[in-house]
Structures are given as structure tokens and as C-alpha cells.
Length: 162
Length: 162
DNA sequence: CAGCATTGATTTGCTAGCATACAATGGTAT
DNA sequence: ATACCATTGTATGCTAGCAAATCAATGCTG
Image (tube, rainbow over all chains, first blue to last red; front, side, top):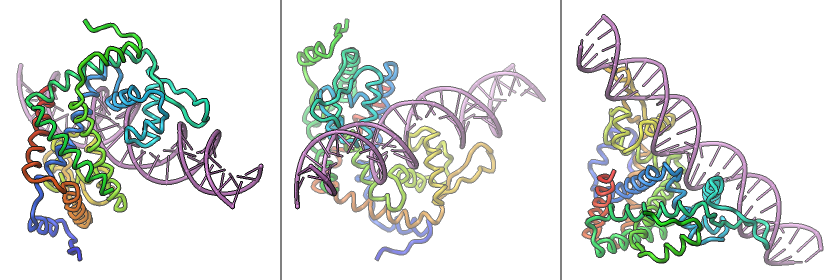
């Protein structure tokens, strides 16, 4: 079935002889890099406020679903429960968030924002708009829409494939 | 200058009163998610061969730049030296790669592939093609090119902004 | 209502990234 | 030559993911 290739040199020959998928590769590569550029940028900008990009994302989602359980937040953020839990724990340590027990179910802890987070949200808001303007410069609305559509299709395909 | 917002409720009001950037947000959100979907997929598929997506990337780059120093590989992969070093170290522990001292400069260690990696490259090749076909289903070549162009523009903007 | 399955959250152990700091080596300018 | 600076690789400490196991509380079912 699969060709027997035992040395790196053999693989180099094999690889040279087959058609390339350079565009596909380039697209994946770009996604990979862009994603890290985004992370690093937000990490750097917000470092002085002791906020990471991950905590930024978490705060945004908590803002939109205040009172949700940790598991719900994990689902919404497409994270494992453990990962979500530890981000929330750090946010709580910083006094931006609090976990309150659910009165009806002693297993769950619901997450609420605390007022000390308000200035952080102002900062995120400002920086978010600044970033949008800078990064999207020269990308027209139609172009942006088709970008989103294309990415969503890939995402759907990937999710469907399991 | 910046409005004084001291409570979450005040921020909610402030946020409601301003124009939204839902498309921009959606695009960033999508990039974030897609990137993790990619990582998780490759991690899962290759887990049985004890290969992570990060190691996959590293092997690809080493393949294309055999004999490079660790710093060079870090630069190519847009990684910090430390991160690149630890990935390479793991690859070496698995016997897929070896680090040889440079005869002229005792500081540098150059990275070479070892033959036991050959079957891994075959697997990566197969799985890569399978993934490309699945994920890009229904995305025409023109569409793909404009996706790449759009992402590249955003990447350039982001890099230019520092 | 007793036993078992399910669910929420946490713990542990691994990989991976960043930033920073450091030792050793190499290069350069005086 | 030697004193200073740059570069390479590594070490350390932090955040962040995943997976798998665990614990407690709840829900379901016979």
C-alpha cells in the first residue's frame, strides 16, 4: 500500500515526485502565524495591566454570559473544563470576577463580574477598537465578509470531519 | 478624556451606547477558534505516533532547512530561541533529529534529521493531504487565493503596527 | 429508596509558548 | 592584546492548553 520509505533521502525523493499543495499549506501556515501574532500583540499591549489575551477572551465571554456556570463558559469558549477553570481562577485572584455557589445545585459555581473589572473593560474596549482599525486598514466590508465566509466554511468542514 | 466608568453596570450602559464592530470581532474570533481546531486536530490524529502539531511544524521546517542552527530555526518558525530549543530537544529524545556541534563555532548546534523520522514524514504527508482535501472541500482556487491575500494583508498590517 | 450513571469542578502530568537572565564563545575596536 | 559588545544556547518562572483521573453532588431507574 504505502510506499516503503526508510531514510530521509528516500523521503526527499518521494516528496519531490508528488504534486504539491503549496496554497493549502500557505493558508494553514498563515492561520497559524496570524493567530500567534494576535495573541502576542494583545499580551504585550495589556501586559502593563497584568492581563493576558486568554484572560481578555474569558472576560469578554463572561461579560456576555454573566451568571453562567464554569462548564457553560468552557463550552462557549470551546475549552476544556479544566482550562476554563484555571483562567477563571486567575481572574478571581485579581478581583475581577467572583464564583458564587448555585443555591439549587451544590456542584456548580456561577461566575459574576466584579466592579473592579470595569476599568479593564474600558481598556479592552479602547484597545479593541484601535486594533480593529489598524489591522483591518485597506480591507473593505465586502472583502471582510468573504473572508469570514471562507474561514467559516473551513471551520465547518474541519468540525464535520471530527 | 476617557469616560469614568466604575461599575460593570456603568460599562454595560456605555457599551450599549456605542457602535459595534461585530464583523471585526467575528473575524478575530474565527481566527482564534480555527487555529485551535487545527492544533487539536493534528494533535489528536498524530497522538498515536506520539507527535504533536508543534513537533509536526518543527519537523517540516527542519526538513526544509536541514543543517540550520537552532537560532535560525527559531527565526524561521517565528519562535523564541528557548521554545525552539525545547521542541528540538524533544524531537532529539525521540530519535528523529540530532544536534551536531558546528566545527567552526562552538556556540552553535546544527540540526539534522535522522532516518527513523522517515516513516513519520510519510505519515505527515498522508495526513496532510487528507486534511487539505477535507477542509478545503468547496473552496475554489480563486476563493482560496483571495483568502490568503486577505489574511496576508491583515498580517502585514498587524506586523507593521508592531 | 438503594444503587448506579451523570455532571461540575478540580487535580495531575504533559506540551508549548513567552520573557528574562545567564554562561560561554566569538568578534571588534581601541 | 584586551576590554567591550553581540550571539548562541540553556535555564527559570509564568500562563495556557489538553487528557485523564478523581471527588462530590445530583439525577435516574429498577
